[in-house]
Image 1 (cartoon, rainbow, N blue to C red):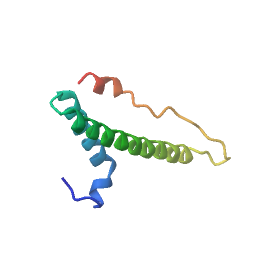
Image 2: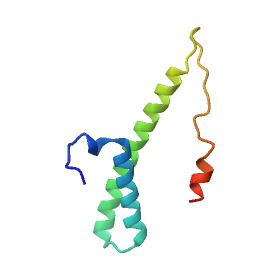
Image 3: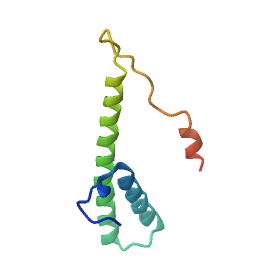
Image 4: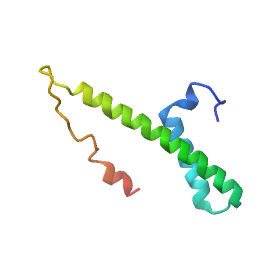
Length: 88
């Protein structure tokens, strides 16, 4: 695990992996209540941070889709293969 404050720790992918690890710990049901609450709290903070990052990326994509005449061509940013990933 990277040291706190390093650049690697704050990447989207690293935060997402950490959130997945936390979810796994909670789903196992093996944590004492206090530890589970702490893990849940960290997970909620990560979830909020990840959501902000995704929202920011979506806004940047919309800006990039802006046409030369100033109109915006908003396109669905969802991936067609999301349903396939959900089945795994």
